[in-house]
Structure formats: C-alpha cells, structure tokens
Amino acid sequence: MANRYKSDLTRDEVTPRDVYLNRRQIMAGAGSLLGAGLVAGQARAEDAWDLTPTDYEDATNYNNFYEFGTDKSDPARHAGQMTTEPWSIEIDGMVDNPGTYSFEDVVAGMTIEERIYRLRCVERWSMVIPWSGFELADLLERVGVQDGARYVAFETLARPEEMPGLRVPIIEWPYREGLRLDEAMHPLTIMATGMYDEPLPNQNGAPIRLVVPWKYGYKSIKSIVRITLTDEQPPTAWNTYSAREYGFYSNVNPERSHPRWSQQFERRVGGGLFANNIPTLMFNGYEEEVAHLYEGMDLIEFH
Ligand code: MTE
Image 1 (cartoon, helix red, strand yellow):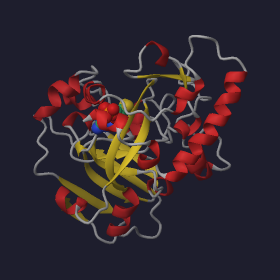
Image 2 (cartoon, protein in one colour; image 1 turned 120 degrees about the vertical axis):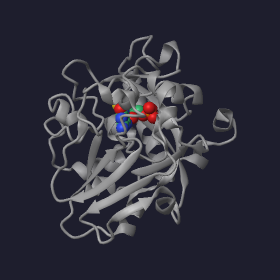
Image 3 (cartoon, helix red, strand yellow; image 1 turned 180 degrees about the vertical axis):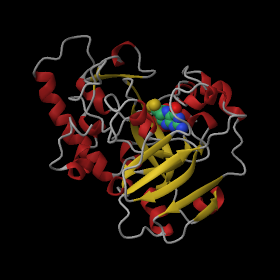
C-alpha cells in the first residue's frame, strides 16, 4: 500500500500544480541557504520540501489524540474503542441549513480527492500524509454561510466510556478548534475522510477530521462532531490552555519560537539520522498560497 506512493505516483500526479510550482521556487531559495553554509549533519535544505509520504506504520502508530492518552502510542492502542458508526455532525450557528447530518449525508455528493500534505506538529516532528477528502469550502457552501459569519468552530467527540484520556483534565474537553472564515474557505483546507487510500484509522481522527497544512498540526482537529459558524473568534483547546504558547492562528512560523523551544527545524518521523534537522518553512511551505490571508498582520504577535 505505502509503496504505491513511493514508486507509482509522481509528484506531478499527486500535487496540485500551483503547490508543485511553489516547491520549485522554495527549492531555489533553499539553494541559497545551502550556499550560506548549513553545517554538515544538518539536513540538506532540499529535504525541507520532500513529499515522500511517511510510512503508513509511522503515520498510524505515532499520533497525538489526547482523548486516548498522551503517549504517542496511546491512540493506536486505545482509539479502536471509539464507535464511529453511526456518526453525525451537528452544523449550527450562522448557516442557512442548520441540522444534525449523518456522516454519509455530509460526504455524499462531495468530490473526494487525494492531497499529499506536509504535517508539522508544534512539538517539532513532521510527516507527509496522503489524505483523501473534500474541500471544507464545498461543505460550507452547501450549508449556506450567512452574512456576518466570520469564524468556523469545530468540536471533537467527547465520550468518556470510549476515551480514557478524558479522565485527565489536560485541556478542557471537548477538544475544540477554530479558523477564520477565509482560512476555512481556502482551497488547501480539507475535511479528510481517508489516508493512504483507505478510510481514516480511528487514531488519525475517523471518520472525519480537519486538515490545514500551513498551520501546526493541533489545528487539524480529529473526529469532528460539531461545526459552528459564528461572528466571534471561538475559544480553542490549546489557546485556552496557554495563549502565550499556542496562538489562535498557529501558522507554522520558524521565526516565532515556542516559549520553550525554537521552531527553526523539524524532525521528519521515520526519516532517519539525517532527517533530524530539516529547516522548517514559513507557513510550512505553503507561503505562496496563503500569505495573502495575513497581509499587514504582525505574525509574531498574532501567532
Ligand atoms: N484532535 C483531537 N481531537 N485531539 C488531539 O489530541 N492532536 C492534534 C491534532 N488533532 C489532537 C487532534 C495534534 S497536536 C496533531 S500534531 C495532530 O492531530 C496529529 O495528527 P496525526 O496523529 O494524524 O498525525
């Protein structure tokens, strides 16, 4: 399964053309970085934009899904307990067609496509995941966003009988996230229903999760049961936990250190010895596609 992505599909086939073009430009820039003398032992800068998918084993056994525990292996061990059928999603707030929709109903009629995206966790590890899903914009258009709505809020299932992690009050459950409406409508923002050509494994957020590739991984909220359109910036799990450490925007930004560690480099999971210090790219490499969303904003203050 994983091999298919390594051997059979070229990047041209799997990467939207504009993203691919962006890659060429980034690599040109990375070349000059190399010229400036990255020391031996650090990753070759071209590794910063390598879209070789992470091995399926790593992507499904090294996870963050705190509802099942804080250890990276907890989600794979415990998420099997989560009932994902039936599944429904409440869509409410400033929409023309509020309601509780079944997962099947939400997905019906959506164009499911594959997107190979880089995933950069705020903890400094990264992966490359071949998602399948649809653009969130298509769903929002279907439910009808009302004038005046400015943000989209998301909530994860919180079912204590099936989620042992809920016993530990690390963050306020349910896990919550949010996007500005223009971020939510951006074509790179998807609702994933699968990965590696298979339905999403529970530990990766079955049956449906958000994926926002230019933001730290914690914005990509798993196992979504509620989507709310609102005119106010919604509270989010990690920002509520510590606003100084985790901003609302959470755009990947190597210049904005976490108070306890630098964000200049990342470790590609499964990448071996030479993938420990890959330069982290502004907006995780999607700068050309998304920088316009933040024009004029101070990205250190609004992190
Ligand atoms: N969503 C929920 N509901 N609970 C979580 O703990 N962890 C986040 C994000 N979504 C998390 C979540 C973090 S920190 C990351 S890095 C990604 O999921 C990890 O996604 P993955 O395990 O599929 O790689």
